[in-house]
Amino acid sequence: MDTGADEWSSRLGFILASIGSAVGIGNIWRFSTIVGQNGGGAYLIPYLCAVFLVGLPMMILEMQAGHRLRAQVVQAFHAARSPLRHAGWVVCILVTGIIGYYLVVTGWTLAYVVFSLSGTRELFGVFTASFAPIISFLASAAICGAVISFGVRKGIERITTLLVPAIFVILAGMVLIAVQLPGFAAGVSYFLTPDFSVLADPLIWGAAIGQVFFSLSVGYGALLTYGSYFRSGGEIPRSAAIVTAADLLVAILAGLVIFPIVFSYGLEPAAGPELAFTTLPLAFALMPWGSVIAVVFFTLLFFAAMSSAISFLEVPTVTLASMARMTRRRAAVIMTFVVSLIGLPAALSYSAYPLRIGGVPVLDLMDETFGTFGLSVSGLLIAVTFSWFVDPEVIWGDTAKSSFLMRLVIPLCRYVIPAALVIAIVFRAASWVLTAG
Ligand code: PFF
Image (cartoon, rainbow, N blue to C red; front, side, top):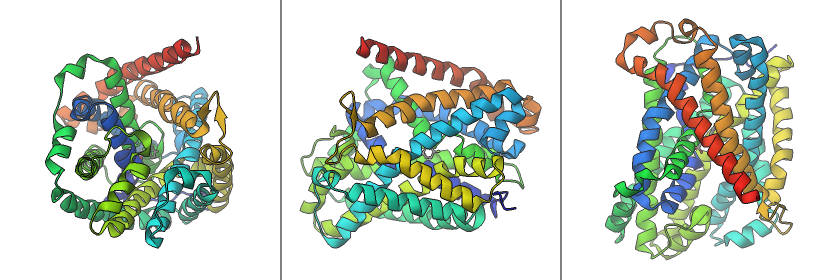
């Protein structure tokens, strides 16, 4: 039976699929939002430290665990210690919760591709109040499920080898346009000038770690699952370094596009989550060739979102397929249905039936609980399980002896990452208790 025991055709296929997972709306939409809200370049130092001290080692650990144990998330936890399989299920459940709202935002990008193609200038508020977000959300979920049902090589690899190069080409073209804008220098200096005074603020560091995890797709088991399809050959640390560099490059290039546009057209850099959907379309409407640029920009967002959403959905799908011994196709259909149900309240939360809990839109609540808090919890479970409860020889093999980098990576995974995540969890829980009280 085909339960998904498929593998990448080559190391390049593995790297491109992992870049597809990492490069997503997190790099373009969430990153520029967080940079804008945290004072521009101030945020970059904690971000860069978090990428290299926390994000990259965690990515190496996850890929290496999947590669060496050759197992999806629950089986990999089970292989560490049998009772730890429950922790594997927790990771799967958290990931499933995240996909629900991630696909809603993916749907927004799809809808904006359609609007910009048809020349409609849809205001974000008008769009979200209609039924269009629900249709575009369900369409995105269906596309994602369809890709996954074709398997690792024929589905995921085939689509990501098309989308990832397209993302880089589109982004490079947009940078060339941004360079010619009058606000390029102002945008770049806002984006890249570091401010050392904020380094003492622990909240900035917490936000940076959270964003790095989200952006690099680590802590959710997605790259562990992708690592398990990388059977032949080693070189995981180098592959992870390439994926990390590509992810960072896209985030920086996206900033070099977005902030010059914002400054050239007198817009607000700290506009928040609506930056991409409300603020930038204002600029597109004023730019020469703006309607073409809008199509290109939203296509970029859609491609990036889709290749990430696929990696999210792969985690529970392959788990279901192997645990329930069903075909990948059937598991993909079931999981697409499940995430469609889970995401529906999030898709409705900005609509004419604004679903809110305690005054907060469900989508924001899901981002906070699954995307931010849940991510720290699942990241902690992965970091602790695979660096403490599995014989290092099993996870690392010869790589551990091979280089200075590896001698650094293992202690970072054992001590620094769990400590940082525990602090992040405690801070977050404390802020909830304080705001509730
Ligand atoms: N890294 C993706 C982004 O930056 O948008 C989000 C993501 C996708 C996180 C898949 C985790 C994951 F498993």
